[in-house]
Length: 118
Image 1 (cartoon, helix red, strand yellow):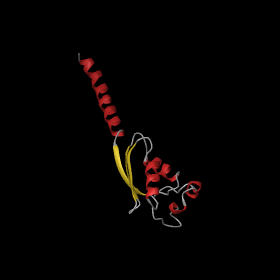
Image 2 (cartoon, rainbow, N blue to C red):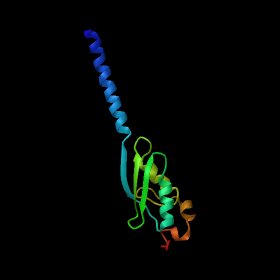
Image 3 (cartoon, rainbow, N blue to C red):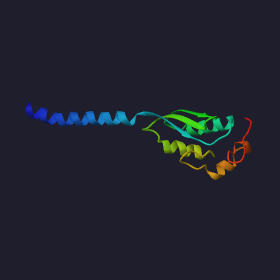
Image 4 (cartoon, one colour):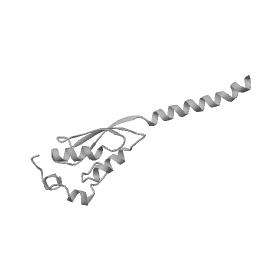
């Protein structure tokens, strides 16, 4: 009987550690970062770009130029979210906008040149 207990203790410890690690990787995070944009059209584009697999919510504030994202850390990274936004022509704190995507933005959405009324 003692031998069974000695064998089971490491197995139980390993199982509990593994379960705890899996729980930690499914953590839902909320982060905020800057995204360049001008208007309501930019807001829609930025939020849609950020909404990739693993993102639960993405809300960009036109006044502060900050986006708040809620995402699952086991599905997506903050870098991937910022890269997705940059691929649509909007620069973030860590990612430059893809030049071709930026040039294809409506003129009023090209935040480096002018503001718009939308």
